[in-house]
Length: 91
Image (cartoon, rainbow, N blue to C red; front, side, top):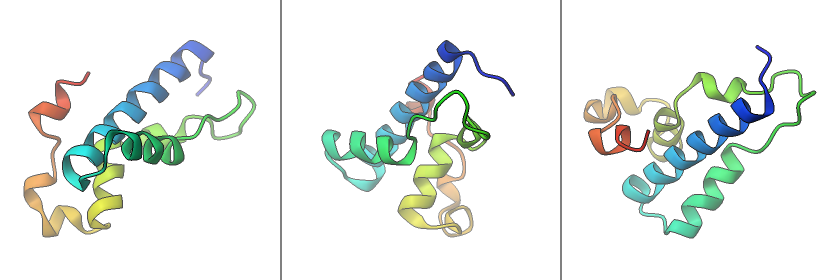
């Protein structure tokens, strides 16, 4: 997929916001720690990066839950399989 810079930056901001929200509310990080975790997990990729935007194929909720609970979080914490309504309200 070819992303315009505006589209890419919009998705990147949204993903970082969602990831940081989950890290604050489910991992207990401070706002600053959660922002830093989101920046580390979703770094800016230059326009010529071959797989730019591939990270967006998984929702920030899922990526954060894997970071917190591991790959088996859906089986071990089925209540977390779907994003919460509070998380969905971020959009």
